[in-house]
Image (cartoon, rainbow, N blue to C red; front, side, top):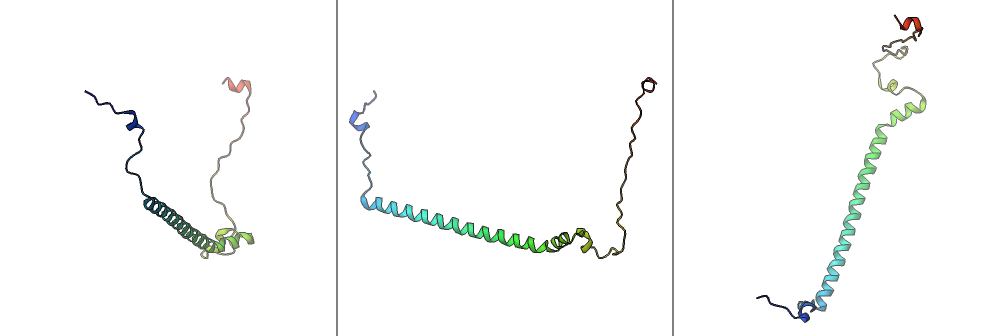
Length: 111
């Protein structure tokens, strides 16, 4: 009921082999696609580098006043706040809790 194939058919090469011009065309198309892929990646990397340099330059330009204030030793908010008077005292506002150590007498622990 089952057909057996001869041993020579199992090891035989496929009958549809490419001709020499087809092999050359495949090689040329593969090389062209590889070159185009490299070109695209180089263009994409160049665009990414330009964007990164542009954003870095913009950030550098926007922070120049802060860098100048830090170099001069001034607080960073002192230059930007024109509404505050220049002869003000430095006041730090806040709350605190003072904890004092309690004596640990044996008699006090038993109460």
